[in-house]
Length: 77
Picture 1: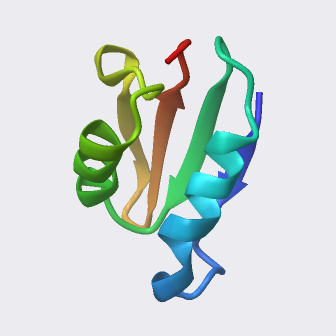
Picture 2 (picture 1 turned 30 degrees about the vertical axis):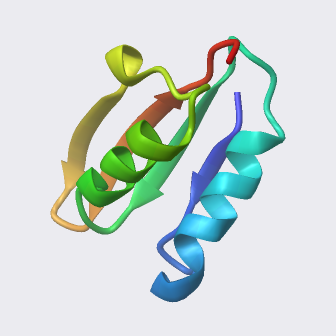
C-alpha cells in the first residue's frame, strides 16, 4: 500500500501531491499519509471532492507530537 510522508513537502503543495498519489491507486488500496498535524481539512476536502474516498474507512492516529498517520482508503467510484 502506498505511504506518503508529507512533512518535507511545502504545505502549499501537499494536497496536490496527496491527490496525485490517491488518483494513481487502484480501488481497494489505502494511502497512508504521515503529517505533522491532524489532516482533518484534507479529510473534509476528500469527502467533498473525491467519490472514490471511503470516508467510513478513514483512520488517524497520533504517533508523536509532530507525527499523525492517516489512512485514506479508495473504493470503486
